Amino acid sequence: MVSELESDGPLVEAEVVQLRQLLKRYLSHELDQWETWKSETPYGPAYVVLSRALPDGALPEHFHDL
Image (cartoon, rainbow, N blue to C red; front, side):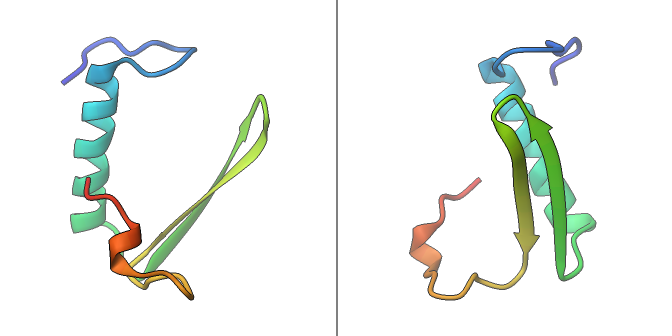
């Protein structure tokens, strides 16, 4: 685990690994059907959709494993 995270700038490799680990745990234990998040970024808002259903027109092979 990363003990002290950078507060700004791109993630370092250890942070990316931790993000993936935490996201996998969240998906396994917290996600029911779907979740929607929005975050402001320097480039405008970013939208995140977590879902147990495939988006319309998507195939499972379109997605990368965590």
